[in-house]
Length: 281
Image (cartoon, rainbow, N blue to C red; front, top):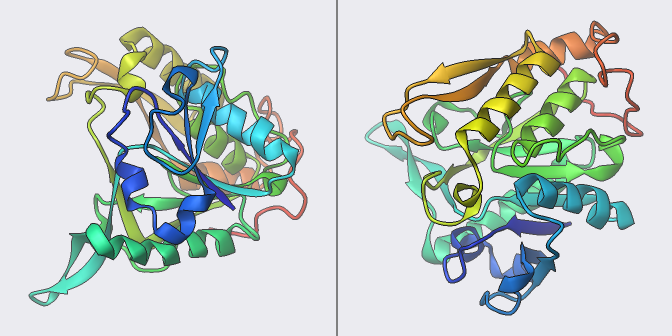
């Protein structure tokens, strides 16, 4: 199983890579634009050509091309992740950031992902938010963000991941849940991501119009389980208002696993991967 960190415009600031345990770095690849080849101080880079322009293009390249060559399991990660774990504090559960030599603890995270991917098509890591309330080792059938462990064989037919420059990860997760293929989200470790306004990454290309178009499509394609919503964010990212989405992930999985979505375009009519996911709600 390899790890793929997707990046752009962040030479010299690879936060996720700095947390990768040494024993996993030979299997970790920085997926970057061709012009950044040789500039990253890492063991392995995977430069991509000018036809691969954005997040979704890279995501599709890894899932369809790289994994299509026979690589069954892989983990795709954002480049700005900080990890944490639960610790007892004053009789309660708190979260402690993992840094320095403690990052070697993450050997068990990636090892656990590899085990779960034996019979689950998609595995994630729980966000830090509300992480102190979660019971280990995992929860099932939720939103998978920033880290996607993928079993290419179990995924089977891949949906149109680069329909939009953004949200390929959401399209994959929703498509699998709609087929009745559940996910697992690890709660022995947690992850948090940097600001969407930070230099580099999706901030270089994302626009309010792009965001709105993708979110309204998600509502049309996966409604009523995913809905587009208009938010007024305090940080003013993408303006005074922006369109986002809200998902009822467990309900989508329940409907898919019960065979209620056969008439949805691309739903259960799509081919499941061999073996299928064995998770149930």
